[in-house]
Image 1 (cartoon, rainbow, N blue to C red):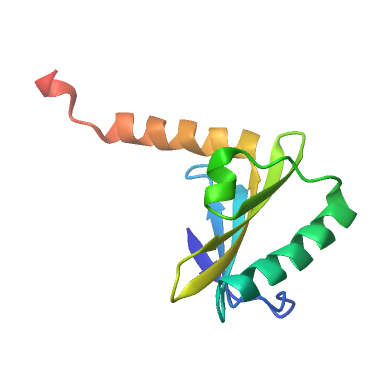
Image 2 (cartoon, one colour; image 1 turned 180 degrees about the horizontal axis):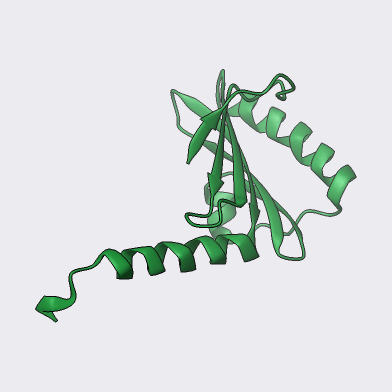
Length: 124
């Protein structure tokens, strides 16, 4: 995971991160993280963001039980998805995470191959 700066960040997010596959160095996930004054303000901002995402990508998925407990909202297109998430009680954080599922699988495959190659097999 690498932090980066962007001149065109969205108003809610102050820190940005990118995740790349270990070997082929392809971007598979981008995160934006910011803070909100309180949970209610975070939920209002999350609603604005989700509406913008719906306009761009289509209908959001119905929230599951885990999603509603964690203030998580999701929009999915094929193997790519974007989630927004609110965490914290006194220090409220609002996150957005884009992920390409196929590249995420590739990242895990590359990570595993690297760990296997580094492992000392003599003890097995």
